[in-house]
Image 1 (tube, rainbow, N blue to C red):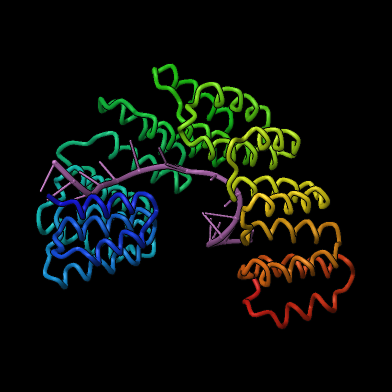
Image 2: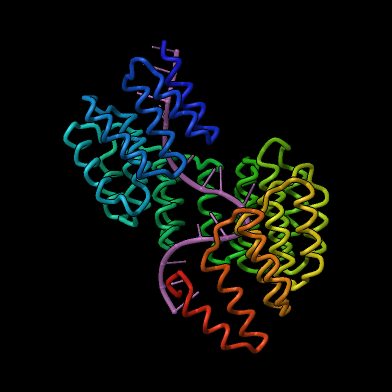
Length: 373
RNA sequence: AGGCUGCCGUAGUCUG
């Protein structure tokens, strides 16, 4: 009975990596499963470096990775920076003849695809005894990330010719690709096709379409999606993300009143939701409302972060509010303990330049503790 | 019996 493995996995899934680590430290006998659960946890949350460090430690403790360990480690390598490590793992896997395994094979296809190495992706893909919707979707996603929409579509069609029925994830991969390239009509067409195939859209589909609306500034489509999303999507399916995306979409499309309406209707509002709304007001240049929303958010015990202050400082700079900006600039570190970045400083430089104080702008630029971007 | 692969909210990243 390995409770520890599942416990670590559970903590990791809830974004509680430190807790997962704590459990790990206390496990009397660390077997392969416990190690793998930990590596998988770190990999899943994009902590690639740490994940690979755990892998190394594991091997130093005399454990040999099995299929699942490799899958987790490869997931970590999907970060482009670890392409070399991925290659190393790849050759290890091949040496052990594990590349025939569907799960590992898929992880390898995806790894290469995410690194933009589509030729290698196909190479692995072609050696697979079976391929499933995951294998194909990885390829579609790989082409999509490279901006090769036609290739992505071709793959998607080839999958169907291969006798595999695309699921919602596969459809979404394609839809998102077109959305990112501002092909709103195509997005909507695919969305309709997907439903004709008997699949109901989930929240992720709506998020993709809304993303497309932002890129294309197509609020008309966004409004249509809004109505359908609220009708179709289940309350427990990413409701907060969906609503935030709607706030974001309306805000970015310049319809701040619609954004507020959605925001007001939300049952919970976290930092991300507040930030989305504030960004909308920053775009409008409505400093007064933005400042009072900022106060309200504090009042509701939502702690602002660096992004919150970017909206605040942007609106100061657009409105030329020198005094206000200094007040927030000070509060940012002194009251909220937020680390400043070059993005924040850029707002201030912009502000000084805007009010005609080029000397001050230049001085800040010279003395700033960042590399100019 | 237990760890496992593809899409996912403000922002970030890259390029300009």
